[in-house]
Image (cartoon, rainbow, N blue to C red; front, side):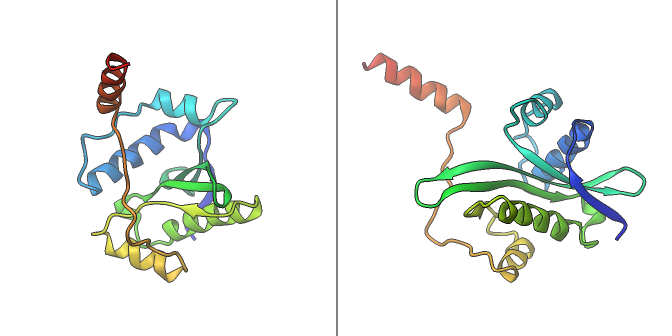
Length: 164
């Protein structure tokens, strides 16, 4: 292997953000990334981190991929992990870094007694779907991702306060 997998560190924040932006472009949502290096640093590498990362690092020190995940709690299962992003830069896809990062997250979950790892995959990303299914992961039919963005959250709370 021309890379190693290691726990992400504060010094990796710039590369992590670059990978997040590249992923947004790949997912056809290039203008959706709002997070900053400072937020990633504070939220991931402070005394009470909100997420963990693993990175794929080449021998020259360049970061070619990352997995970003965090703990959740399932009322049915107990403690679980949400894999937010798994990304390898386009020029390095096919070298095994994605599988190595994925494996490291699953190993972490297993070693620390998590009951489940969950994530989303776009329905048109057939390569990812085929890979996940080949590892035993199940794509759930009938479940839809629900999100409320900041502006709608603010609007809802504002309107809810008026009607009380």
